[in-house]
Image (cartoon, rainbow, N blue to C red; front, side, top):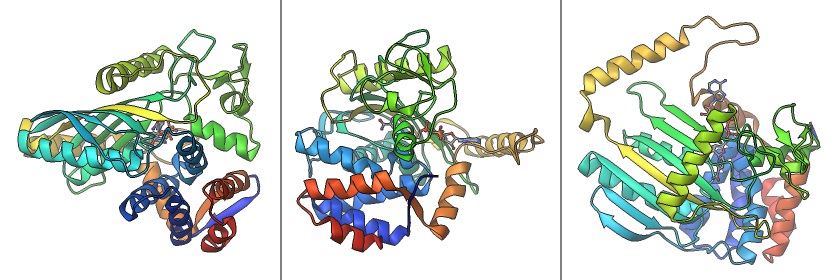
Length: 358
Ligand SMILES: NC(=O)c1ccc[n+]([C@@H]2O[C@H](COP(=O)([O-])OP(=O)(O)OC[C@H]3O[C@@H](n4cnc5c(N)ncnc54)[C@H](O)[C@@H]3O)[C@@H](O)[C@H]2O)c1
């Protein structure tokens, strides 16, 4: 692994709070942004952790990210909500949108919530976790307005973003199911992390700017840009297009069909369906069948190369327990980018380093 730092959870939070104050964010916004990003690092998704802040800084400086903005209801029709994120921090407008959606689902049994014009909603699993916490199921289709980064199956250039698909299911008395992934074979941020660490990618994940296979993650990070491939060939490609249509065209009123790669903002559109399981199913039957499936799947004897069968959400819980105990690794390039962002926000980079203990 490339050189870097291992920073404690509390120290990383303190340092990043100082950095986010540089956006002029009110106290609640500082808290929501930092909690969300550090949680992504804790759960092992460094692609969506504090390493996003340099990008957010560039987006803020070009006017693509508006601090202290809040969701505005465009349509409020009981179980249907259409919300405008007003280019606010996704960590804030995503949180506010989910609070509204959860309240409606508790009242009506379900809520279909469309959120557009949100700055980066980051780890979409965070929004499913809010629903799970309230005992609700949620399904999220998300599109990305940034630049094309993923090629359609059979295509040779990037035509859409890494369009994540996410489902959260609470399980009584057990850990929830949290399926949350980019529809590309890897998330774009994972290419950034690999590029920052000077690592190669395994074959079959990327194509270069001529459409040829490559193992160099730079083709997903710096010009000339190639493309990341969709996961599962035509299946992932199809799901990515569905996310573009439902999260983008339907929910946000804004889908990606452009070649402009000049802007640093990352906006997301998200269609969320929230379901109260007790409103549609017999509670005892749903719980019994869910537990039976979980036990049945976990009981599959592990094949060679695997220690056990995991369910969606397990790897994140395991990584979080480890990183809370051992600290959060931040590679050297990402750390330098964070200090560079502090400078751009007119903060003293040394004070950030001091808070982080680096
Ligand atoms: N906001 C955006 O624009 C955007 C875009 C793309 C991705 N994302 C986020 O990036 C994050 C990372 O996405 P990713 O595609 O790199 O995730 P990933 O490839 O690590 O897959 C994660 C999912 O697979 C499950 N999983 C992983 N290993 C498993 C195993 N061995 N057994 C069973 N289940 C397993 C995890 O629990 C999780 O549900 C997600 O949180 C996603 O929401 C956000």
